[in-house]
Length: 370
Image (cartoon, rainbow, N blue to C red; front, side, top):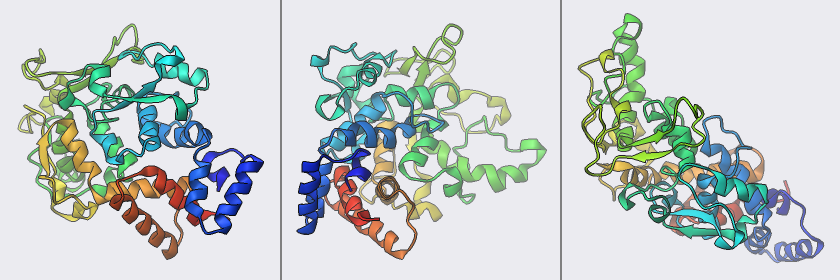
């Protein structure tokens, strides 16, 4: 159990204490004891979270604000839904003498990595709006972290941010939610209605993803990743850009970023984005099975409310538990017993404040001895 949770062997004293606890039927207490080891944060959680922060799912990418924030949320038993909507960020303690947090550099987190900083002891929660200068209403947890912006807002159309959020936090790629029965009225102009000269391809394939994705990804219409394309083509020194109220894009004349209007000649009669108002078309049709919350309206403005829509779905909760199962049990669920256990842990997760550490403890208890 200790090795699965921390990736390192237990000391003799901790091993003895854990054996006693397990012998007395106190599996949860034994798991919680194991998770007091800093390696749970520096090794297990870092390696578990880091692939979510980049398009190549690279587990060895440097520590960044996305990874550090999720680690902090888990350490502090913060409601895990906050990672997609909260005005929060985790930074290194001032006493470490690190380079200050920078909107245009990862040096703060790179220094923590280089010095093997104990993340359990030295991560500090802060308001993202205070640290980065984003308006509070524009913050959306890790979706508005610098690392996420660099990976998913850089170039492109901002659809990547939506797609990779689905992959990482709802455990499905676009193919898994494709639905050609949704109306295509919010599909942007850059999507050809006759790819290769064949309109059937759009109606039977393209629309399946775009009809649901485009009205949701509109939540990111005011965001971009700004960088010097000539001097810094990889965007290493770039930063999240956001059009505040009163700011306009020179190409659109609106707060909407120019990337939302690119390739408009592909289909001039397509949807023209004029705001960050989003709507979830998947509340009808087969994707109702993602379990959208009845307490939310299914539409809104901006990334924060859209992040809440995703994080309050039943699929979000089950996805987190499924990912922990694979991390701790070192395998995918194989039979009805495994799937029933995931159901049970998911129910406990949602009923008890979305505390991710408890998910790790419950899963480690289930898989112990394998």
